[in-house]
Image (tube, rainbow, N blue to C red; front, side):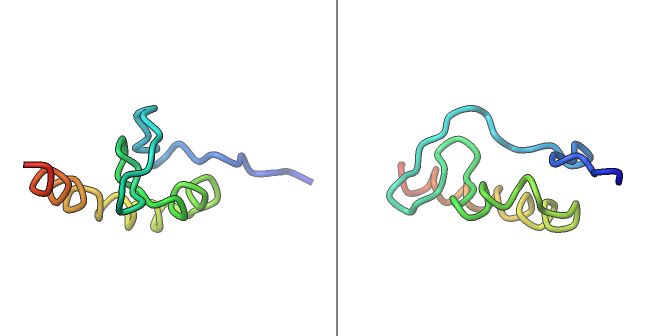
Length: 67
């Protein structure tokens, strides 16, 4: 039986090592929810791209709120 690797590096993680949740329960480093962070190692490439596509808007919103 051949096992596939748990981590698929074709779509790299957005983690920057600043792992702390803000008031909206988004990671202040990568802007993912805790559910998305937990899901990441087993998510398909398509799902990872879906998660990644949401991060720029979350980052922009966080900047606007903190201004």
